[in-house]
Image 1 (cartoon, chains in turn red, green):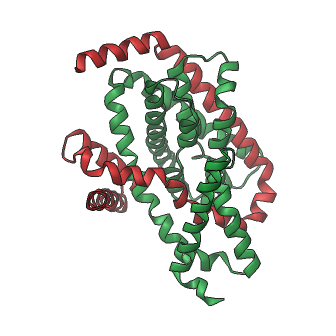
Image 2 (cartoon, each protein chain N blue to C red):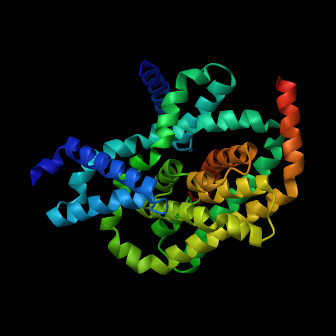
Image 3 (cartoon, rainbow over the protein chains, first blue to last red):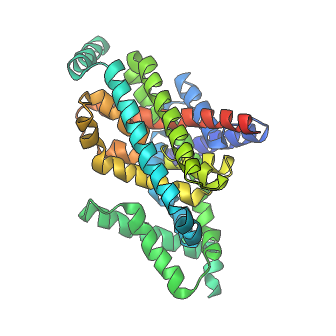
Amino acid sequence: MIDTARGFAVIVGFGLLGTLLHWLGIPLPGGVLGLLLFFVALSTGLVKLAWVERAAALLLRHMVLLFVPLTVGLMEMGQVLQRQAAAIIASLLVSWLAVLLTTGWLGRLLLPGDAVADAARDAAAEGAQ
Amino acid sequence: MTWFRNPAVSIAITLLAYALAVALHRRWRWIPPIVAACAPIMLLLLALGEPYGDYNRGGSLLTWILGPATVALAVPMYRQGKILRPLLPRLTVVVVAGAVVGMGSAGLMAWLLGAPLPVIMSTVPKSVTTPIAVELCKELKGIPQITIALVICAGVMGASFGVPLLRLAGVRNGLAIGAAMGTASHGVGTASLLRHSELQASVSSWAMAAAGVFTSVLAAMLMLFLR
C-alpha cells in the first residue's frame, strides 16, 4: 500500500514537472514530457524500478476506467458524428490498414526472423547468467 | 436531480459500471470493456435527463488521471527497452515510419472527404495509446471524444483482424507482427497477441509506447508548421 502510494507520488511528480515544462513553452504534451523525464530517470537509476512498479502496473491495467468519462461524452456528439461519419470511418479504415502494413512489411525487412531472434535471446540469457 | 452535481456520485457510478464491464469481459471475451462500461452510464443519463456536463464534473477527475497514466508508460518502455537493446535502432525506424504513415494517411483521408479542421485533427492521433492520443488531440484543437472512439476502434480492429491480415500480406515474422500490432493498435492489439514469444510481447509493448512518443514529436512539428 505504502509502496503503491510512493510510486503514485513519483509518477504524479513527473507528470507535474512535464506540465510545467509544457506551460513554459515546450510543444510536447505535459504527460509525454513527464514520460520522457521519467524514462530518463529510470535509465540513469535516479528512480528505481522497484519504487514505481506497482503504481505503474495499477495505472496501466485499469487505464480503460480513466477514459470512460470522455467516451460517455460521445452521447453529445451525435450530430457531428452523423454529418462526418463517412470521412471519419474512411480515415480510420484506410489509415489503420496503412499503418499495419507499413510497419509489418518494414519489420519483415529490418527485424530478425523468428529463428534468429530466439537464438539471440538465448545467447543474451546465457550471457546474463 | 441535483445530486449528480456531486462529483462523488458520478465517480461511484463510473467505478461501478467499470467493475461490471470487467466482469462481463471476463465471462464473454468479445465484449470490449469500454463499450460495456459506457453504455449503461449513457442510458442512465438519458433516462434521468441528466446533462453530460453535470456527470463530467466528477468524470473529469478520472480523466485527469490519464496524465499520470501517460507518465507510467515509461515503465514498459524502460523494461522492454533493456531486453530489446540490440534491436532498438531498427525498431525505431519501423515505428517512426508507422507513426508518419498513421498521422498522414488519417488526416489526408479526412481532408479529402471534406471534414472540417477539428474533425481532421481528431483523426490524426488515432493510432496511439488513449492517454497520449487525448493529449495530442487537445493540442491539435481536435475533439477528444472522436479521437477516443477512433482509438478504441483501431484497437478492436487490431485485436480482431490484425494478425490474419498481416499473414495474408505475407508477414509471418513474429517480431514484425509484434511491432505492427503495437504501432497500429496500441495496448489492445498488444494484449491480443497470443504471445508467440516473450520477445514478441516486448517488441509490441515497446512499439506501443514509442509510437505515442514519436507521434507527439511529429505532432509538435506539425503545429509549428501550421502556426
